[in-house]
Image (cartoon, rainbow, N blue to C red; front, side, top):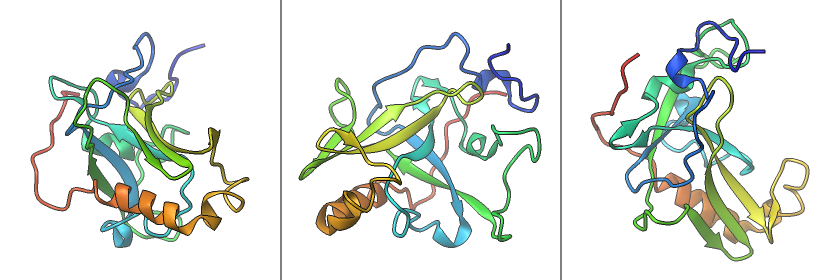
Length: 179
């Protein structure tokens, strides 16, 4: 069986034989699909469980372009996402990692919660990563959200503030890797 059997995914994005990169460099970019109307802060209203992004990679070794997050890695059609089911245009929200101590993993603490940024390669998207939230060491999921983060408004707002503070809202030149 092939590593990534979806034909429209460029080989450079396949995970086969690539190592997981545990550290996120200070200034590394993260890309997330979101509705155009939520581009200013896509974290304001969503349930804070695992949040998927693509990472750009380290400054000297770019592994993902901004628009790579638009590839459909579930099926052959559509090849790229352009609209949500309700017809709203999809945009790419860009975050800049704030991890001044590049020798450790990105982990922030908020009371009994941890916000961790983890490289999570999948077969057709090597740069895939997630923000994982854990309550007392247990991963926050849709199933336990009501009993954990939903009831802890202060921590939930602190996590939202941390994520929204990483959003790039000015014009920047995005690093790219050749296709």
